[in-house]
Length: 73
Image 1 (cartoon, one colour):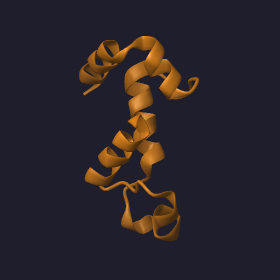
Image 2 (cartoon, helix red, strand yellow; image 1 turned 90 degrees about the vertical axis):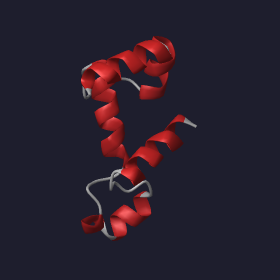
Image 3 (tube, rainbow, N blue to C red; image 1 turned 180 degrees about the vertical axis):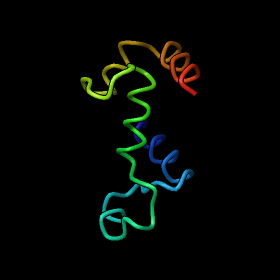
């Protein structure tokens, strides 16, 4: 479910949520959903390289995650 939310964010902001569509026509998009996930990862953890984001968010908890994203924005 959380990855579907990232896909929605990608679609709303001109990024491809479907990797096949992105690979077929990358010039039609700003980037892809993995780019969106990386921004979220950096906002939440402060780092580009981390263990899997889903696990981090579940350990951290929703409130702390939202707080960090708000500060990032």
